[in-house]
Amino acid sequence: MDLPMRVITADITTLSVDAIVNAANERLLAGGGVCGAIHRAAGPALEEECRGLGGCPTGEVRVTAGHGLPARWVIHAVGPVWKGGGAGEAGLLAACYRRGVEAARELGATAIAFPAISTGIYGYPPEAAARVAVGAVAGTLREDPRPEVVFCCFSEESAAHHRAAMEAL
Image (cartoon, rainbow, N blue to C red; front, side, top):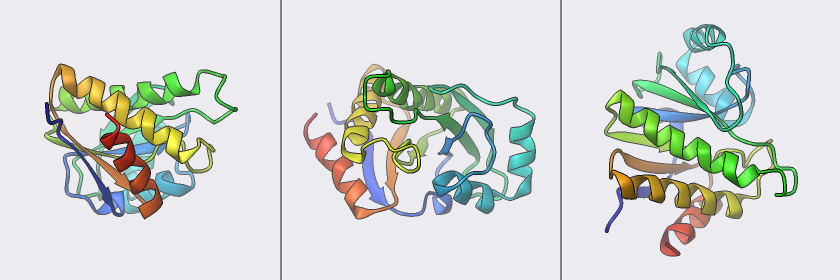
């Protein structure tokens, strides 16, 4: 079964998809990396909406409007901080991807773009994170092949890890 997944190297804030995923922190406030870039591109209304949500636990997601982004929605996923791999990081990271896809389905989104969650300041090893991401998304899409999932990588190195994980399926 061909699953609706693809890998690109791009700036996630520029994508014209129904939903993009923000690699968020538990407070859902603007931070560094992709989170900061999404907040800057969306404008101050995103942070204002996020403040009203009361945060988000690691492994879960929250949804806001896209505000100034081309995407209609932002799905905020809080990935785990890497602690060496023995603290349930893989399960929490997989949950971010599964719940992101499920949230997109509930919204009626036809396409969702994910960054490489937890691989920046949270320190998750990029190759291992790509395997978890692709595996979690593939498992979710096998149950229901909606929506199309785009792994939007900031670097060609990250994209190569995601492509390798897809080839290994």
